[in-house]
Structure formats: structure tokens, C-alpha cells
Image (cartoon, rainbow, N blue to C red):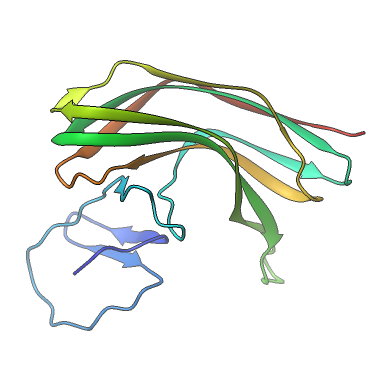
Length: 188
């Protein structure tokens, strides 16, 4: 009965799916049938409260202890995007920073992370797409990004987002080839 986000699926089998959301929905009678879909696409531009980031496996955690510390980040991502339908696609590759905080559990304290800032991004405007098809390799390289955050514990993640105003266009997969992210804190 609608979309949900940003929390996600907590349990599923081939018969049912349980999702947690921060929205409320009316209680309806139990029914059978229906579909559950995962859509990578967001409106263009994406809404501020849900940028639609999808994380890659490239990430690094860093600790900034002083006001003069600098974080040097480099990243690379080669992508082969497959899509269905037709229209224009905005593909964004970004290095995003998440700020860590300790949860309130005295028995099992651990770090949680909230989105803090996009450190650097590259945006590709791909027009006139018609598929099903797979785009040629899109190579994105970030060479030595210098970040100067406040002292804290951070998680830097290489992430992607797909946006389109065209309802008929849908990204169905993105196969990553070469990919990396490295981060180093330099004390000054």
C-alpha cells in the first residue's frame, strides 16, 4: 500500500515480507497476493530527506582527534548499469561521510552512524536511453579529496544514486568492476 524507507526489510520468506518504516499506514484486513519490489530509482532531484544512496562495499572508518587533522580520501568505481524502459537518467557517484555516535545500550554499546555530508560527487546525465540495455563502462575516479571534519569518529562510504523524472525508466542492476576507497588521517 505504498513505499517505505529508510529502514527496510527485517524479515522475509518466499511467503511474506516484514518491513520497518518511519511512516504510518492504515491497518487493513489480511489479504493474499500482491507484489513486493525494490526500486533503486528516486525522483530527480532526489528529496532532501531521502537521497536514495546505495552503498558499495568500499568504505573506511577514520578518527579525527584535532581541529587541524585532515582526512585524505581516494576512490574509484567502474560501473556497468543495466536498465529497462526509456528516458533520461541522472547517475551520481559520491563519497559520503557518516558521523558515528554511541547507542544508549549500557549492556551492548556500539557505534551507529548517521549521514553527515557528501564530501565529493560526480554526476552523469545520461539522456535518450531506451532499453533493455547495458551502458558501457562508466569510470569514476576521485583523486585525493581533502576533508576537514570536526573531531569525531566517521565512516566514509563510496555510494551511488539513480534518479529520473521518467516513470518508464528503471535501473535493474549495476555491476561494479574495479572499485576502491582509501582514507588516511594526517595529523598536523
